[in-house]
Image (cartoon, rainbow, N blue to C red; front, side, top):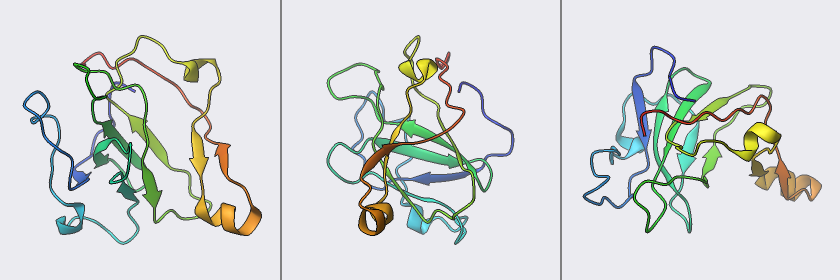
Length: 145
């Protein structure tokens, strides 16, 4: 998704992402718990675990968030995957998540691939582990990368 909807102002970021000279201007490193603009109903994003790569989240509306992934290690600019946690979701609400800094020409998401999701609640209640999820998944190269 290469363009955002108007009106996004709240930036929710992960607090401990290491800055490097080549990406220090790309990510805002403030702690989201210190952001007074956060509402109790906002989604909570986390990637402070092994292989987590979420760099920045911009809240556009109450149900639409733009996500920026950190660069893959040992590359100049590639971002081809994502791994993060979301909490504070509400049932029967459809959320839209746009990862806006992918730069590959094409993706298997355009061929029907769907992201994997793991729900701790589903795992404990229904013994359901990782599963495919999401509807209306589309991939566009970001022309600003």
